[in-house]
Image (cartoon, rainbow, N blue to C red; front, side, top):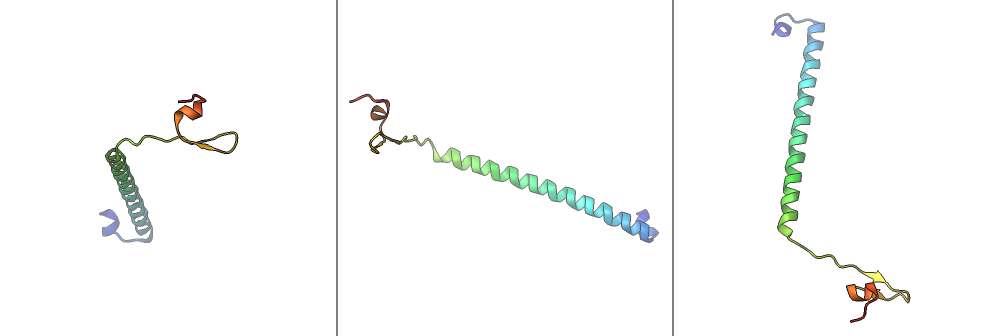
Length: 77
C-alpha cells in the first residue's frame, strides 16, 4: 500500500519487481501442478493397458529370424 500511496519512480520499480516475482512464482507452481497431473494420467493409461508380454526376436547365424524361446536358447522342441 505504501507504494501506491506515495507514487515515485523507485516505488514503482519496486512494485513492478515484486509483481514480476509473484507472477513467476505462480506460473512455476501452475507448471509443476500440470506436470504432476499429466504424469498421473500417463500412469493411469499405462495401468489400464494391462500386461503385454514382450516378444524377443533374435537373428540366427544364417540370418534367420527366431521369435520363440526354444530356438533362441538352442533347444529343439
